[in-house]
Length: 112
Length: 114
Image (cartoon, rainbow over all chains, first blue to last red; front, top):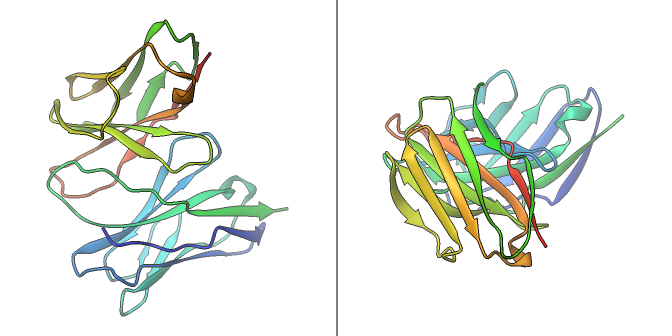
């Protein structure tokens, strides 16, 4: 699985968009970008994933650069409940059960 | 119940005790996982079960013993643990045949070994 690099922490004002970057310069053609988040002392929560097109769901938007070497998770209107550690994970889809490798992620703090 | 549930949510046990953690998924998935999260560390995979068969054991000490009686239930049996085993234990499930890799996690069991 390709390595990812994320800033260790970010702040965002409540109601503003939170833009969380992820660098995955060694990503290969069959690898997807996944985002999870973990609110303090809870289990991680799946947010969104994508291959090369931008994706949007009820939680967030995922913007992947054309060369696929980086991506940005966008929370359009951050709330205090979005304060969490956000993990960017790159891996190929698989027909077998395999682990997710979580790095250190980005601690997002939404400020009132 | 929906999603992935775990019981108990909190557990304190002595080093000579035997206890079990339980996980149940209500999503119709066919793969289940145990992860460990120690303080200030990333999640570490412990075990993977695919169609009730253990497919991965990530060099976990034998004092942790998993059991998967069916595709909806997963247990982690604990005995003679050490204080350094205190951690958040997370269960997850996924639907492997769909080719996706979205894992859905339970709330975790906060284990303290005294």
